Amino acid sequence: MLKAAVMAAAHIQPCSLIWIITMAACAKTPDVHVTCIFSMDCILPCHFKPAEGEVIHWYRKKALVHSFYNGSDVLEQQDEHYRGRTFLFQGQFAQGNASLLLQRSGIEDKGRYRCHVRTALGDQESYTIAKVEAPIRTMQMTSPSGYEEVTCSSQDIYPAPQLFWSTDPPAPLGAIKPTTRKMADTLGLYSVKSMQKRLGNLSDFTYICTLNSYYGTQTWIASLRERAIFSVSGKGLTIPCLVPMKFHNFTLTWTLTRASKTEVILTYDSLTRQISNRWKNKARLDPNLVLTGNGSLWLQNLEQSAQTETYTCAFSAFQIQQLVQNHVSFIAAIKGGNQSNLWIIAVVIAALALCTAGVILYAKQRGDHSQLSRTTEDATEIQHMMNEGGNNTQANNQAL
Ligand SMILES: *[C@@H]1O[C@H](CO)[C@@H](O)[C@H](O)[C@H]1NC(C)=O
Ligand SMILES: *[C@@H]1O[C@H](CO)[C@@H](O)[C@H](O)[C@H]1NC(C)=O
Ligand SMILES: *[C@@H]1O[C@H](CO)[C@@H](O)[C@H](O)[C@H]1NC(C)=O
Ligand SMILES: *[C@@H]1O[C@H](CO)[C@@H](O)[C@H](O)[C@H]1NC(C)=O
Ligand SMILES: *[C@@H]1O[C@H](CO)[C@@H](O)[C@H](O)[C@H]1NC(C)=O
Image (tube, rainbow, N blue to C red; front, top):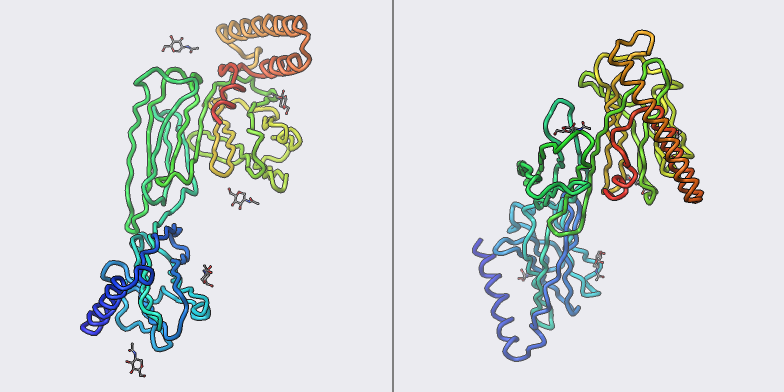
């Protein structure tokens, strides 16, 4: 201890002396900033004018981080916190490189480091400011049916990120009042969980959760929309899902949630262009259509279920998650249907027929070919199900 103190004092004095004689020798080089990624190795740079007989000391405040003199590392006085995690590149000393390798950086490692080098030329000092960041790596958005809230969460982040909610279309002023909790674990990493009450009816809004890292290096976005779909049991069903097209590396996963159990139906990987389909020929996704932004799932002969079944289309790419939850409920086949169901079906069919006719007429009048193909496709899609969501194309695109 005493030795360390004496050594430290010995370093300061010659430096001050030289400071008076020549500004250049001890001139303050500007602080170097580095960002260490949590749990990864990190190099704290330090440069000096190379000369014989280097005596190198690295400090953080009063703590001795690493020492080198008489041709070898001297670590007896090293602070406990850095034990076994620091290295100097002796082979680089001749180039004036006294950078410190800090292994497995942790949150406690952040701070201002002093690199002190004494050579035959005198004393040189420089500072490195180390930030530590545990980047956002995942994000989850859920909206369990039967609950009032949409939940957005993420884990193992440092420093604590900022989380924002928005909706598409924009919610009335003051309607977005989330409850957000940030908690640090024993390593100092934060988990964040935020809940926002659902607004309006099921398919009125797309909920968008934005997670910004503290240093502004990352923005993650998750979005969720929901819609109700009515299906006639025993019939095939196409459930639409639009996929943002600007991403090259993404996965698309269709799941079914029934009685609060979730099973994966199929997964599409954009890199391999492979579909792993657990439902075999009961479900189908066209890999060529996915490339054009159409991730619709085709289901064969849905069996009638008393409960609502939720078919979720989850798009996941780097920094972006998009969930579309389709709540499918069944209208009994006409044969077994009761009075009110028959009535609903009749109205729906009549409305759809009118709608389709109107849409075709309108498109024809416009003479716009692309418009025609799009709207008629949408119309046929509607015939397979009653989409309460309305024009979701726009909403999805805007959300991203
Ligand atoms: C280096 O070693 C020599 C002898 O081996 C010793 O006299 C000298 O004090 C040492 N230098 C330091 C800075 O301890
Ligand atoms: C100093 O040496 C280390 C280890 O070889 C290297 O990673 C670093 O880039 C060097 N710094 C400079 C400025 O050359
Ligand atoms: C939406 O909710 C309102 C009440 O908040 C209700 O009057 C309306 O009928 C609902 N619309 C639909 C399409 O369910
Ligand atoms: C694709 O994305 C995943 C997760 O976002 C990532 O782990 C992987 O390294 C990426 N692959 C390529 C080739 O970019
Ligand atoms: C998406 O593909 C399905 C067939 O899998 C088709 O029925 C549907 O009309 C297409 N939707 C759009 C918007 O292109």
